[in-house]
Length: 300
Length: 254
Image (cartoon, rainbow over all chains, first blue to last red; front, side, top):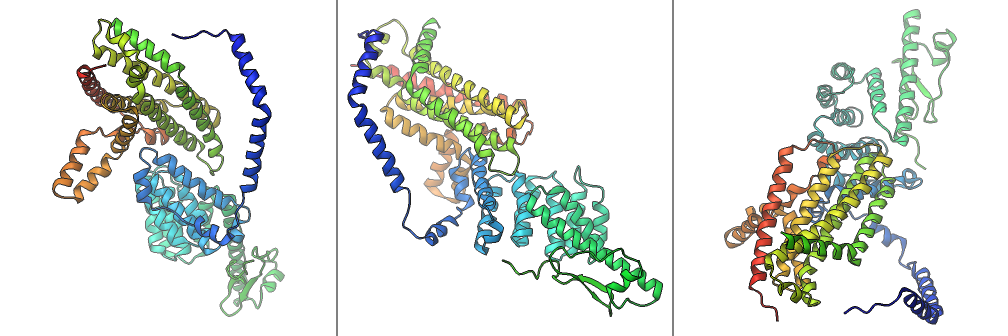
């Protein structure tokens, strides 16, 4: 049997008990809040915390325990990547360990959900351009060859890494040919692939490749880096062409870049974007950058 | 049939009024909405992140409702002694079991519908695209929840609700790991191999119901496959509920 209590009586009853314990309850809640605020800190040193922070679980174990939630769990680890990388001034503070941590996480994410595209782009752009880990990037990207069969960007990124960071033009051209056969790939790819075989060290090839890469990368920081590099390479190409024209006109290499400028072959000597200047060797007629394209710049 | 309907509507109302159900639903909705926040922390592919988390939460909370409410479903009647009122009536006990089961499925269906509509709204406003694949993925999760409910009711017909819930949870993990069990069976030999293979054969392979990946990557799902998993689920549910009513028939109520 259910006893029916009229609504009015029920409310009165509850209000009465509320009044009775009101102060005590508020006090307890207050004490609880104070305790939380007081307890929300740690004496442990920062070093110990950071040690723990680097731990990345093994993909096989995560796969076994994530049941039908592999994609969501992969997203969770991906968020760890973006939160770590998105940290203010990460690229200035980052140590080798930080980059290895990011590479491991990206590896895990692509293991759990090999069709997730953004991590591959992250590997191709951030890990190789900013983290200096092109081998690791290539290893991660190769997983995408199978999982994203129809995506030309994956073999394109691998090809770029082989050409630009690992100095293997032959492999680079093989991957570019692979990319050129996939739907939606840009029309310049086959030409670029053949150029890689014949003119591997040519600056124009690199410029073409970098321009293609720039079109596929969304990450601002990496884009800036690529654009800087593009500017430097284009400048060098411009100056080099000037030197060639000088030589055709005068049948000798110019003593300095200023002489090319004095003849009116070039309008100006551009600024080197890495803070150095453009060097010129009158014996070989070669133009290069004093910072070796930013590689010699001291890291802050 | 009338009796089934009566018990169905009773169970449905009971479920829809239960605090546990609403508690889980509200929590699920909060978690669903949180995936909007989560998707902010990634560079791009918002649709993927929202759909991944949304579908996972729907599947997970569907399983939670199935396990906890399912394991308690018959026991509550025993506990409150309302069972005597029902078994004294001229209806078969199996009718009672079916009514209870279908009532709970109705509750779970409402749960899925609410979460599904919310997920669709989220995807529409946040990622700006709509497709039927998400609905098919939710349907797969619904079948899963229906099967786990059947397991929970089956276990609860001969054990306590706690043990039944625990066993149902274990069953869920086994059913989601059939491929791992098969792979480890291949490495074993003798009796262990035999047991592992038997487990993988007896329990349903629930990885087949996981249609989240095609929904997220916009692959097409063959209509036949949807039909096959539906048949597969109904087959298991039929067997489990019949077994449950069989055990229930043999039970003495004092």
